[in-house]
Image (cartoon, rainbow, N blue to C red):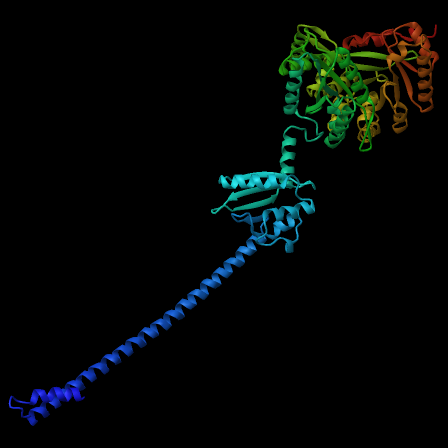
Amino acid sequence: MHKLLAQQLVKATDEAGWVDLDKLCGLVVAAYEDIDRDRRRTDRSMSLMIEELDAVQRNLEHTVVVRTKELRAREAELQAQNLRFDAAISHMSQGLVMFDGDARLVICNQRFIAMYRLEAENIKPGDSLRHVIDRRIANGTFSGDPEHFIGNISVTIKAGQQITQFVELDDGRTIAVVRRPMPGGGWVATHEDVTERRLAEIKIAHMARHDALTDLPNRLLLRERLNEALAQVERGQRLAVLYLDLDQFKNVNDSLGHPTGDELLRAVAQRLRGCVKDTDTISRVGGDEFFIIQTGINNATDAEHLARRIVEALRAPYELHGHLVMIDASIGIALAPTDGSDANELLKNADMALYGAKADGRGVYRFFEAHMDARMKERRALELALRRAFDNNEFELYYQPMLNLGKGDIRCCEALLRWHHPERGMVSPVEFIPIAEEIGLIVALGERVIRWACQEAAQWPSDICVAVNLSPTQLASKNLLPTVLGALAASRLPPQRLELEITEAVLMQNSEVTLHTLHQLRSLGIRISMDDFGTGYSSLSYLRSFPFDKIKIDRCFIKGLGDNSESDAIVQAVAGLADSLGMTTTAEGVETREQLDLVRSLGCTDVQGFFYSPPVPASELAKVFAEQPGAKVAAA
């Protein structure tokens, strides 16, 4: 203030040193006005600054509130993510474990803890990898050298490599472990229990090379094993390939159903296992066909001994679902290197040998021979010709009379099918009937024979019946009863003049179903006879289960009469048993007067054979009927 007044005094003093009071007053007033303006200006500036500071403070407070909300929302989101992450790793089907660059545990989930039977309180973040391994060693879920294990992990992680390995635990489990490197030197690993998957893969691989029904090697594995075995043949060893086919297996399926057929195949497979060495291979290649690779043999005798064991083992009766089943096997044998050193060649030659076995009869084995190729071609040609013969009706029925030993008259004639081949002439039923069975023609052919026989028998004297043989497949056919009824109706042949012959092998395929069909036929008045009696296993039991009208004693017993006391005793016993059961007895294959007198003395009621008449065409039967056979069959 004094400084300001002094400044104004200086300004109001003139040169003479006099003070101009008015000027001084004006200067002072002006100065005060300036000071007041400056103060107001300052106050205004301060007010503006305060307002600006208030605005800044309000903005800061708003920003703090907004950022706080954002931070809290972010914190809540992170917390939710952590919860989801925890839930995810806790509910993973795989065990999850993470280690940092110092091989210290960062995280592991509950699945990992449970998978290796660890205790959660002993496995915590910060634990070393060696600590985790030691805990696994303690509970038996780790085996091997831990230092070597840790070293391998370190090498692969440093190399930045992902590694997958399968670990087999002592308790049988298989764990798939996948380790992935992370930035900074750490890694994350997943542990998955793949036991079921591995078992399924093993099962699928097994199924690809094994038969589902019998669990035997299939065709694919057969070839692999055969090629492996042939590699040993090149080093001087020998082997045999046996091709086995079940005889009459189709009849089992047709009469007893596929479940029983499948059970039979499993039983056959089991018996085959008991016949071979552990180094041999049994393979089912489809249907009722089996291959056996017999290794380490010295000569053909070894293969022959095996074939005999198989035939005998498979021939014994089977008890399946309450049914007694019998079946034979035909076997073809090819030897390496004699019959070939190539898998295809050996299998082909074994196939040809099997055809040879079937052509020579059932239940036999045959070795491959060079001429069999031509024989097989001939047989296949015969198959085609047989089909054409059926279409062209190249067949004819012959009839062989059966004579009553008491009155010496013809009681019945057996219908026997003959085939007139346009080039080969008369073909024996022994040749074409097995082929008809194999190619599925036997039922249609049998139905034709029934109709044909009834038509021709209707022209005979009214006291003579006709006998027709039924195959196992025919008897199992649902069309049998309608076919018989249709044939009787069309021919007007009385049912009592039709006789149906079956073998005991037919009964053994399905006794329950077969007996039901036979009872239906017999209730119509049709006569039922058992053919080839005594050649099976259970003849007597079937005589108790069904009231047969006639028993036909097989020719093998008649042939041995006089020279074999056993045959005499059997024929006498059968004749006596049949008489006590109210059945007649026909001796088949009587060819001499001596045999005729013997069967008469042993109690047989009827005879059939070349001694009186061979089978003759229907056109010659009238002549046979017109003859007087009584004198010829009368006692000497």
